[in-house]
Image 1 (cartoon, one colour):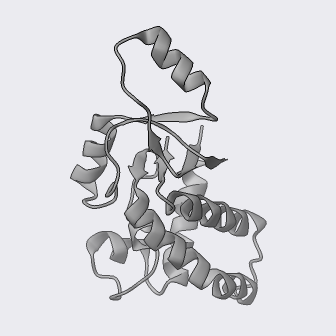
Image 2 (tube, helix red, strand yellow):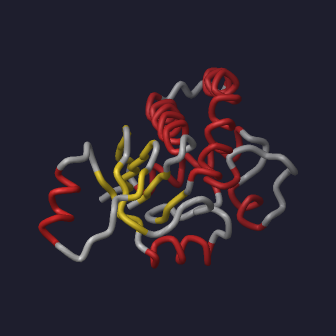
Length: 173
């Protein structure tokens, strides 16, 4: 079992219809479609206010996407190392005692197995990933731990947040 991460770029609402055949034809004629339910968005917003900003429930087509899988434990361990890289700890991020302006906070303090992140927070996280890419690689080298898995997760999330930050979203399942 693991965490599936799906990123979507340029979400466009699909026209609503009561006719199932018409809806199916609309979906079939698009490159891809995804549905964000009211419950998924509300649950995310209840636990992590602002994370789903810019996203409303509905079925969307999207222009391009990216997906990958990581184990739950691997993702938690990676986020702990990301917090260390960013100048804090996971515990401090979760308790709100992290340094002001610390990057990646919205991802470190988030579910490890579900949830959605909308375009507003995705754009912020995309900037964090891009701005810190070189530093992160150097940090991995200086730590003596050039772990391919760590770098792979970092690169996958960079791509995912760049896509989602362009009028898209990320879905964790």
